[in-house]
Length: 243
Image (cartoon, rainbow, N blue to C red; front, top):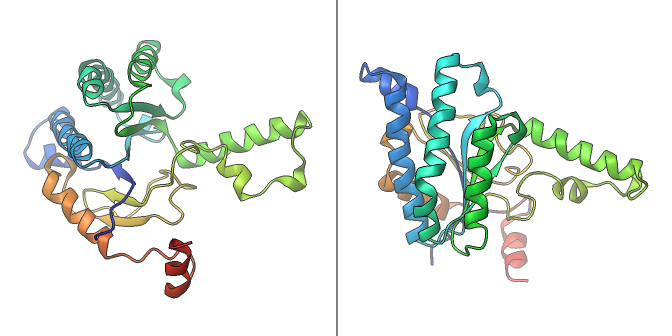
């Protein structure tokens, strides 16, 4: 039986280059990227992948041209409003993570509404990282722990890896088994820095707008060949999995 990931994370990269290669405005790449996203979400629903986490907009993306940022924010808002009922009908539970207070109020409202509508669904857990950065995530977790220490609810000597793990984003979910990055870049770009410690990394040259079911299945085939040892040797890893 092939190993299948319980949690897939994806850095959806290459929309701009896809458009530029076709001498189209960058917005065309973003719109085509949404189509690719729909197909991947539907695949995960159909094949009962439990968790999918997508990097939609990083804290560094604010450095892009103002017009493009505005367009992306508008597209994300429209996507939430237009797609949430389809997600709901597919029993998908939506969660948005990141520094949401930094987003426009109308986008925050769309996020809250979408999350409330889908919060009791039991199918695919779809997480969207929006205005998110891995370093920010670790900092906000550290601040939360410091508050506990100041309130004398936690002693400094009690702080360990498990303490921090309890305060980062998605702490209530299994960490990603597989990270996919499209477009040929081979870095994780400040995404889920804590959570990706033992994640299998899969890089593809395919630009995100061209990324489809065949590409996802190639990534899953790659994952099936991997031996996940978590720092153990092979025999120890096999024994641990059967405990």
